[in-house]
Structure formats: structure tokens, C-alpha cells
Length: 242
Length: 242
DNA sequence: GATTCAAATATATTCGAAAATCCTGCCTTA
DNA sequence: TAAGGCAGGATTTTCGAATATATTTGAATC
Image 1: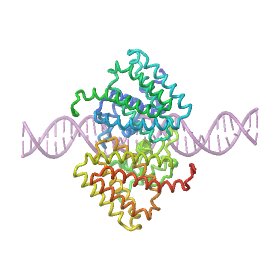
Image 2: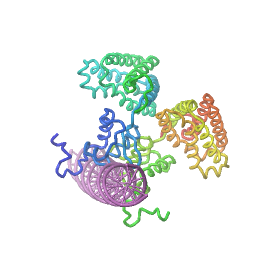
Image 3: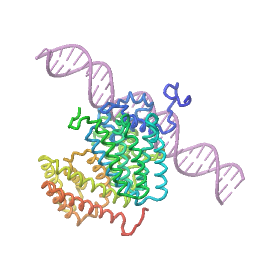
Image 4: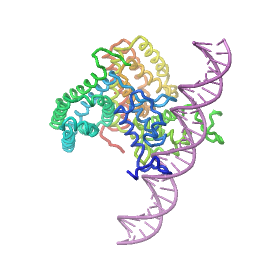
């Protein structure tokens, strides 16, 4: 801590040290996913430089990267804004992700070896350690859960040989994270159900039952998205954008 | 020309003027697609700044963008390299693009209006003006052909409401451009065939025959990729990477 | 009061220099 | 001779200042 002081450090030259760029990219994305920065909000450099304590150039590179990932938009001359969210987009992202995840897990089941299997079991175990906790404790370790949940789904498809399929799948997963966040505080009763679904997906995949794994994944993802959809578009009618 | 002189201009301050960033991004991508920079080649800032006459920061942003598009790779601390090419990747990109293009054109056929139809016909006409030319003339206007070919395929799917589907489709199309380039000088007899295929695709789409349009697109893309594959992997055997 | 234009402010964009890191060749030593 | 380590140079990465662009404010005119 005492050493990490940087900002107000008298003449602390550059403080480059570790890769600051990578850091700020992850933090910025996390702050957008967690709605710290609201959708459509302008992202001003003056504000961000002081918040993350990095230079303008580094910030610009990170924002540019996030733009190509779809988290922010860039209008030439007018700066960066947080990308909007919408029920329509959620539906589309969900469909694409399900499509990718199903294809990838099928490929993984074909090509996966014993290490792949073992890794799935291990990562699932780590996930279940959090999901088995009572609600209050689980909420406290939510950030950890997000990470382990990501690792679990990633482990399922890690043996898929298609690098681009994995890449696109990963992009969609990241986008879904944004929408998953809205259900963070309202997944009381659903927690136990997700717990069970993850176990079933793990078992079906390790057992190399591709059809069953694909089907389980589809309902699992669709279910989560539907819950987010209900919050985004309260009524069933078509309450368009604000 | 004479006015555009910038680099050696005595104390020419910044020369910012128009968006230099956007420019260098497009040029850099074009130079990678056209294999001006060979796969795996290191991209040194010293070399690029003089070539494109822009600052390091601008260059870094452009390269970072290209990295997320998959044209270059970035290893922390070691700089940027042109992304490698391989027969395996071509096969995968082709499959993904075909999948996206077929889905998108089906959606477009459902949602497209008369303006959409008219635009397809117009853009196809512009394309055919080049494709109808004798071989020598066509080669001379190859850059123009690339642009119009892109616009033609884009017009087919432009009425598809799924923004992410279009986005991913566009990514794969850009990647395919890299591989299409290797067939540039060897598509003598195939030129007439492609000409005909484009016409058929245009007609089927405008006639709202989704099944036929999808089938035509599939064979059209697959055919082009197969031609590139033969050049990349000369024998039918599995001659791995160099 | 509404509209137009211009100054002033705020913000984005670009640049080159400074610091950190990586690579290479040479020297020492066992 | 081979392994290890230490300059020296080359390259990347980061930063803040300088410039260009957009937006707002305010005054003058219709």
C-alpha cells in the first residue's frame, strides 16, 4: 500500500512499472459491466484519468479496445460513450451465445482429453463452493462468483479447436455479463436452481453426452436471460426504448 | 500532392487537421490484407511512423484496434506482429462466415423493403461493370473490385435487424479478405464463373427465395475459399505450417 | 422575444519525449 | 568449452503538453 502510492507522490515520474494499460482496460470494463458507468453516459478523459490514475494515451487505447468489443461507442470528435442496452440486444446476444456455446461444447466433447475432463470437474467444484453458500454469503462474494462462473463455462469449451469460435463465444459471454448484472440482487430463489443446472451440465459434458449437454446449456442460458428480460422490459408488451 | 507534404515540413507543428487516426487504421489494415506486411512480421513503431507519417500514440491506437479485429497480435512488452495465416484458420473462418451470411440474408429477406431491393440491384450493377471487363482491365481496378464486392455482399444483408449478427459477419468478411488476396493473380478462368454466381445470388435474393439465396451463397463462398486453400496447402495431404 | 453570429470555454485528438522493458553480444568463471 | 551474468543498444510503453474540434455562452440585431 504505502509503496503503491502514486498519484500525489511528489515527483513520482512515470510509475509505469507493471502494465498499467492492461489493468485499466479490465477495470474500465468491469465498471461498465457493473453499471458503475450507466449506459449512454459520456466518458470524459478528465474524469477517467483521475479515477484510474493513468495518462490520456493509455486511457484512449483501453477505450478504443472496449469500443471494438462493443462496450462503448466512439463518435469521431465527440468522444466515447457507454454503449446502450436494450431488450432486443439481450435477445440477440443470448441467441448468438447459445449457438456458439452449443457448437463449441460439441467440438470440445469430440476433441477433449482426460486433462480437459479433470479441469472441468475441478473448476466446477470451485464454483459450487460459492453457489452452495447461503444467500447472504454468496452476495458478499459476488465478484468471485462471476469469475468462477466464467471459468466454469470456459472450461467446458476449452478443448474446442476452433479459435475463432471460442473468440466470438467469449465476446458474447462478456456482453451477457452486462445483462446478468441486472439480476444480481433478484436471484434469490433461482440460486439453488442454477446450482443444480451447473452440476447437470458438468456431468453431461464429462460423460460426453453431447446432445444432453447442449440441451442443458440452452435452457440454462435462456432461463437466465429471460429473468433479465423481465427486469428490462417489465410488462410483456412492447414498451419501447425510453 | 504538393500541399499534402507534411513530414519534412520545417516546423510543421501538428498537422492534425482531418482524423489521421481513422486514416492510418484503414491504410494499415489494407496493407496487412494485401500482404504488404507479411504474416508474422514484426510491426515496429519506428518504421510505421515514417511510413504513415503519424505519431506513436495514434499508431498504437490503430494497432490495438486491429488486434481486437484479429489482424495483428500483441504480446505485452514485445510489441505488435502481423497475425499468422493458416489453412485451418481459413476453413474455420469460411464456415463461420457462411453461417452468418446465410442467417443474415434470410433475416434480410424477411425484413427488407423496396429500398433494400433497389439498393441490391444498384450495387450489383456497379460490381458487374468491373466483373464484365476483360481480365487485364479487371486486374488494374482490383482495389475497386474489392470495395464493390464488399458493398454487394453487404447490401444483401443490410436489412437484417440483428446488429451483432451483422457485426460478426463483417468481422469474418474482413478476415476472408486476407485469404481472398492470395487468389488475386490466379483467378483467370474463375472470373466469369464468379460473375455469373453474383448475378444468381442477386436475383434469388431480390426474388425473396431465401432457400435458393442461402444455397447459392454457400457454394459461392465455399468455392472461393477452396481455391485459396489449394494455394495455401498445395497438396491434399496435411502439409503443416512452415 | 427570437435568431444569428462570435468569443470563450470545455473536450477530444495528436504528438514527441522520457521511462521501463526486452534483446544481444561480450566477458567472466568454473 | 559451456553456463551465467552484465553492460549497451534497441524497442515498447506511458505520459502530459500542444493543437484542433465541438459546445456553450452572451451580446447584438431583427
